[in-house]
Structures are given as C-alpha cells and as structure tokens.
Image (tube, rainbow, N blue to C red; front, side, top):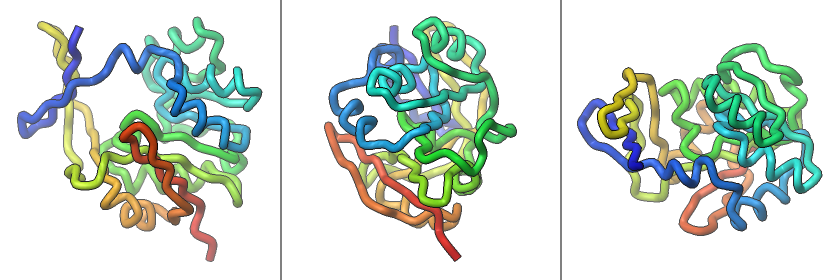
Length: 196
C-alpha cells in the first residue's frame, strides 16, 4: 500500500506507512535514550516513539489530532491524548523534551508558529528535538493531502523545512540550535529556548 503526501504544486512524496506503524528503529532508540524526561511527542501517530521511551524508562506523553492514531497508540500501551498541538496541553512550560519527528515540523503549515508553541511547552533548560529535511531539500509552506489508491484526503496546511533553513526558522520561533544529531540519513536538531 503506497500513500503519497501531495502538495498543491502537484509534487508528491511517498510516505513510509509501514515505518510509521513499526517499532522505533535502533537509530531512533539511541536518540530517544539521550532525552531527559518527561517527553512530549507532538504528532505521535500510533505511539511508536512513546512506547519506545516507556521501554527505556523515560516518562512520555503522545499528542495527536487523529482519533485513529490515538486509538492505535493506546492499543500499543502508549499514554496519548487526542488534541491539536495548539490546544492547551498538560504540563505547559515543564516538559524537558519535546519531539517533532517524522516530518511533524510541518504540522499546521506555519513552522515558525509551531516552534514558538514548542518554546512555550519546554521547561527553561528543556530541549526540542526537531527532524528536518536533508540539506538541499526545499523549505516551503503550503497545503498537502494524502492519497492512497482511490482514497484522497482533503487539503490541510503543511510545511517542509530543510536542515539548511531550520536554524533560521527556529530563531524566529524563539529557539536556538544546541546541536545536530545526524544518523541513518536523518537530520535531528536539538533546540533550546532563547533566553533574554
């Protein structure tokens, strides 16, 4: 089953649905083991990262707007809530780690606003881990839809941010680069709050 994420300009990229539902990879587990808890996973989907964190003994909560995703997460034993990332969330300003992996920096189609929201969720010394597209990838905001065989979703706001542009986008959202974690061809930025 191939699922495509298609943008309004007609370009499309395949989504690895099997990966989305699979357990965390070895490379992801190394990254997760480096996090301080509690961890908030924004756009948690079926909870694979929340489950991996629990297995590592790190307290975590997943948040997703999809009822189907939250049902799947809870079936796997993940602690997860159905909310928009822009809704009021438990523990605001007290999360030691906030995750935006698997392209979730695109949620809402306005990455600066999303990262500004993340900054408000973090504790003072907390860190966000944000996955970016590889260097050279396009950074853009727009609308996208999901396509699978004859099933097509409605258009929703989405963004794509490359590693080349993430530091600038993060700074506009009140976050600063602490460092990069690059593994298995994936680019993860560690971001902290900008202190006045």
